[in-house]
Length: 237
Image 1: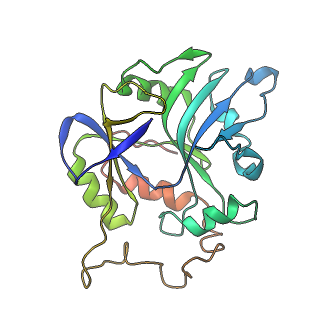
Image 2: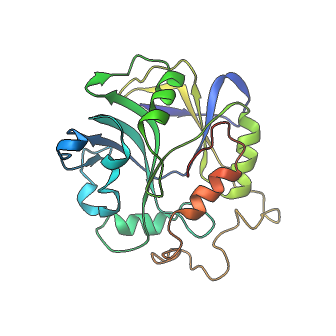
């Protein structure tokens, strides 16, 4: 399911608002009973390419899923020392090169134990996802805030994150459909002369486009940044 572009940040009691790092969108297929050995993880991008062989960091994702099988929707990211997306480092990893760790940020669940969840309301699917996925450095269910889209947008601008996803609380999951039920609010660059440290480019000592930038950071900066955002259900440990 795909979002439409929003004109700008907004508040709405009918929506859940989530931070978005603008990474590579994938569907993760976890199959096989945990006590009988999982089938190899599949991570299919929008072109149907399986990225799992390129990302051994996520090989143990199935160990964090409590169901026998599941299909998860989310984005793969690499973050720098401040918890912001490092697009060049991610592109390098997706070319099979070594580099900093990736993380899978999960925002939806489509199937659980063979049962389709597509027609359930988003808020119900999010409840299932929180029970289904045990958070860790390599995977976390993205938290949300109800109603307060402008507050979250202000926080992601300060933090240098790509944008905010606004999704209708009652939205079903419509595979392959671009719908106003989901809206993406892209972070707008501050006007010249008004940039702050979080959004004005690489931190001191980081080279723009350097695939090794943040290589020693792991994903702790991203988890720390999530905990600082004004979200309702922040619980990644």
